[in-house]
Image (tube, rainbow, N blue to C red):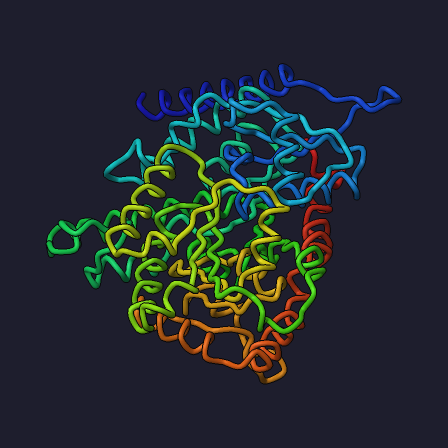
Length: 473
């Protein structure tokens, strides 16, 4: 009797599942071309499409590539930026990234984005955000079922939803694994970090429990991620982690993100002898970017020069603020600079347009980047293309893919803590202008593999199998 009941339950569940799937398809909006023919749709899941960071550059170049190669495919973007109109979002993409789209984009506005905000989950943040992404994914799915679905923000738990309930082929572009073996190592070693609170790192029991939680989460993350028909990752570091966690290396491809090197390479590469002694930091004001280390390293460097010399040096921190949390971080950074008595030498530029960003790079001598295990580092590439001397963290994408020797010569500097960053800054400023020019030229020559053209070719090549008529439900 129990077996029969179980079989009936499975049959009923399967029937209801396919009824719901059919209903979702039928209620979804249909797009037509100028001749009245139905257009296929490709949807990008990017709840923060108006954030103005490196991930958003990938999104808009990907959309542009699809529109150029497949003009009869309707691009759709799921976004939680309910405070911005489509025109405002596209205008920001133009201003921030110098990207103008050749076709129309349909925006599906999501109201439940708060469910994926880290601030909502002071504990079990990874699990909370992932469960929240499922609810956000359901809202997206119930609003519109596309022919092809691509997650471009790292919400792997939405992939099974769209594959099974939406009935469409799914793909993803992974900027950074939600969990990594490095995170497990840090917890095992009981190292305090922004994602490992001090009270946990001090406790053997709590550290063990967190390791178990991380391992279970990593397994679930792998189960969800391997539903993807095509997996694109942005660097060697990300590839290693995703291949290990998702275990589908044959479907996993390194596609370096599109860096606007063509625009930045227009900046004349000449002697920096007359440039101001300015250090520039580019990046969103998120905790993992470790802006406090930049200020501490700059302070340590300044303490090593005379008070008279000190005034000629300047640190500029430029980047986008997404929300109140980011604004609070900026205020805390200003307080830190004041506490270290260097506030007059530290400047903040928030949410600047592309033209101002380019001008800042042209007028800076050093670019600094301090994120540990940065997945790739678009701003690292942009800074090298613009002709600044790059000083990045000795880990992740910068170490493995970007700030590497080219033609047997260095392309920049790597450091790991405030002291080594301070020493590197000192070394760079002590180089002769001709020595820096040779390094800057070599760095610029090494960047062709990160061009928009290279990204578009690889992205389109992988998307063609998704857009094949036979694969579209």
